[in-house]
Amino acid sequence: MMWRTAGVIALAIHSVAAWSADVCKDASSKALSQIDATYAPKIDLWIKVSKAMQDKGLDPRKYPVVMPDGSIEILDLLDVVDKLTKQRVEGYRRVSSAEGDCEKQIEPYQRILDIGTFFATGGLSLVLPQSMTHVDASQILSGHPLGGDKALIPQLREQLLNGFGIGGDVACAIRDPLRAARGQC
Image 1 (cartoon, helix red, strand yellow):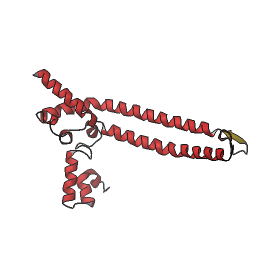
Image 2: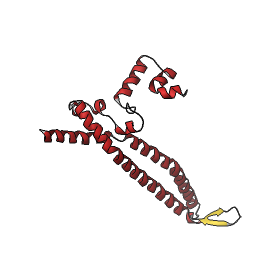
Image 3: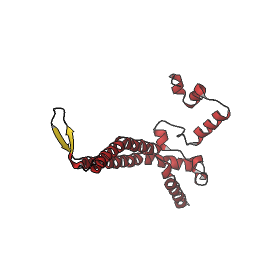
Image 4: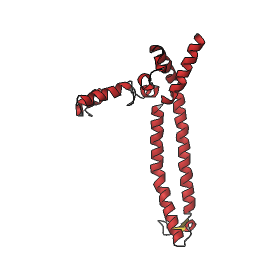
């Protein structure tokens, strides 16, 4: 019986693992967006300039740049595009690695919460939809004790606020009393 319970708990932990680390995924998504916002326009610009030079019969590997002292330096635009692309890929790699590290740091806390949820619900957490019973460690560790926006309690709160037509500063004060106390609503 004990081994069966341990197996069920292990299954619960494994099945809920995809839910954990929302904070890590959000940070990763923001970082990737920032990388794209930084590199994509530059890469596109230099590709367009290279293409325009080629269309006019000029060599994009010999783009003349006038320096502040009046001298002329030759810039290899294809090399610039290549270097920018490599920097972008390196940024993606670093973000992916950081996301993995972040998730590894949260994993022990998530396992504890998953086991606690299993016992607190009498095993119902395996039967009920995950959105009803899941407690995300990453949300708690990031200062959201009721869970993120997708958690059950915040969703119910929003449904009640909308149902009663409560908005503006009053809704802000209900959502985040500390923010309201600072006058930031």
